[in-house]
Image 1 (tube, one colour):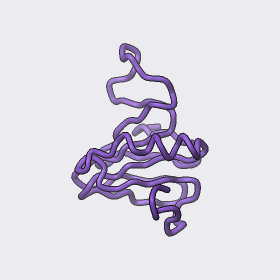
Image 2 (cartoon, helix red, strand yellow):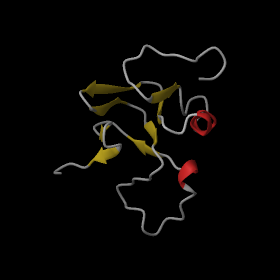
Image 3 (cartoon, one colour):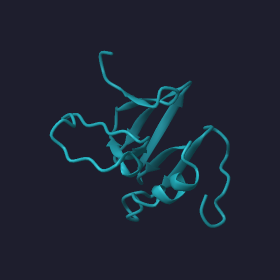
Image 4 (tube, helix red, strand yellow):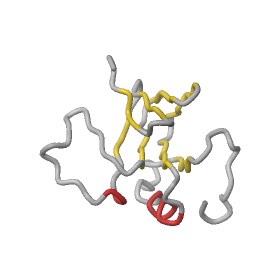
Length: 112
């Protein structure tokens, strides 16, 4: 959605994906895309990392992180004491084993 990267393979609908996220310090680049296309879910996938999609859910695999840009914030520690930016500037990281519901746009917490 930048430069000559306007269309992907079409495996995931309504999702913008950036690669080499932390290795190339691109974790803020997604905000440019989401400003133009706010309906999209943004995913930033680091090197040596992947998501495995089954139906409407994915699980993070590998050694790095996946940044999720869905206008919310999630943390294993909670967010009650955190000073969070406005919704349009929020993202959070998932690591290997974490799962996400694409249709509900939320993290799947184990045991729920």
